[in-house]
Length: 279
Image (cartoon, rainbow, N blue to C red):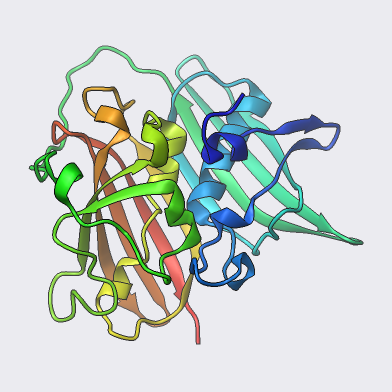
C-alpha cells in the first residue's frame, strides 16, 4: 500500500523488457489552470524515478551519492516508461550504474532520458561539513505558501513556506537572483533520497525571478549530490530549507544550483541544473 502520490509514482512493474512506470498528469510542470499537456513531466520526479529504478533493478542497498540525468525528449503522460538499469562497476566501497529510459507510442520507441548514479556507504573518518543559518522553524507556521493559477502542477504535492515572499516575475530584478524557502512533501512524508530528488527541483527556475517577463527554458542536464541521510532531527516532519540560486544566464543557456539544508543548518544535498533557453 502506498502512502503518497510520490510513492505511487515510484512503484514499478517488472517486465521482460525492464521496469515500467507511468507519469501521471498531476506531475506536469505546466500551470494548474491549464491541462497537464500544457507542460511536460516534472524533471524532479523523473530524477527520483531514475534513482529508484536503478536501486530496485540492480538490488543496490548502499546510499545514493550522486545522480546525473540528461533529458533527451519529453515523455508522454499516462503511457508506460521502460527503465533499463545496468551496473557499470560494483565494489565493496563504491558502485557505478547507468540507466536508459524509453517510451513506446504506437510504432515508435524513443529515448526520453538517461542517467548515471554513484552509490556508496559511509566510513568512519574526520567530518567537516558546510553549515548555514536557516530562518527559524516558526516560519513553517507563518510563512507564505505557493498559490495561484500559474503555480506548476507538481507543486500541489509540496508544502512551501517562503522566506519573505515568492519573487517570481521580477522580484529579484537588479539584485542577487536567489529564492529561499522551507519545503516538504505534502502529508508530512519523511524526507529521504526520493524526496530530496523531487524537492531540489520543485521550484520555478531562479532566472524567472530576475525578469518581469521571463524567458521560456527547458532542462538539459541535472546533477544531484547527496551528502547525508536526513533524519527526524535534521528534517522534522519532512521539512528542509532550500536555497535556489541562478549562477549564469546568456548565450542561450542558464545554469542554476540549489542546496538543501537541515534544520541544524547542515547541508543535506545540492544540485546543479543546465537549461536551454527557448525562442
